[in-house]
Amino acid sequence: MTERHVTPWLAAEQVEDWKAVAGLMMTLPAVLDAQLKRDSGMNLFEYHLLVALAGRPGGEIPMSDLARMIQSSPSRLSHAVARMERAGWVARGDCAAAGKRTGARLTPAGRDQLRRAAPGHVREVRRLVVDNLGPERLRALGDAARSVVALADPEVADLLARPDAD
Image 1 (cartoon, helix red, strand yellow):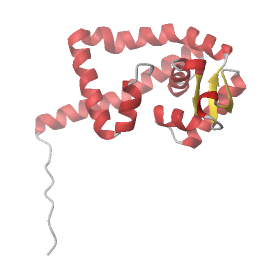
Image 2 (cartoon, one colour; image 1 turned 60 degrees about the vertical axis):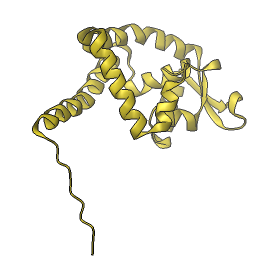
Image 3 (cartoon, rainbow, N blue to C red; image 1 turned 45 degrees about the vertical axis):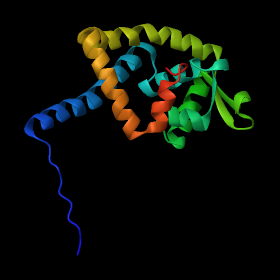
């Protein structure tokens, strides 16, 4: 005999909260992406890539670690890094900290690009999230996000919990 699984459907209030979370996941990245494209000519994925590199000693990370860190397929990361190499923002090569593995390294031009892009991005993050929520609700949202990420992908949660993660 086959065991039947009963789906624990969401209550009406849970559905409304879930719809709000789904709306946040869809709209916030799109708005931040548009701001970065408009103000600095890069997209949100590229910005996160530069931030990840800037937060590491020597500004370099093995490509495989970078892909995990920013939740990217190797193919998407490779295409983005190629675009950013053409712009002069990153360079690929052997990663000194990881033996012979190929890594991405932040160039001086990439660090300058990040310095130019960061103020506008931070203003938009403050406007939409930080100042809008205030300290208590922001802390609650951060705690909730860490809890979900820890369950969804413990490896990413560990990466984000590192003191040098951005």
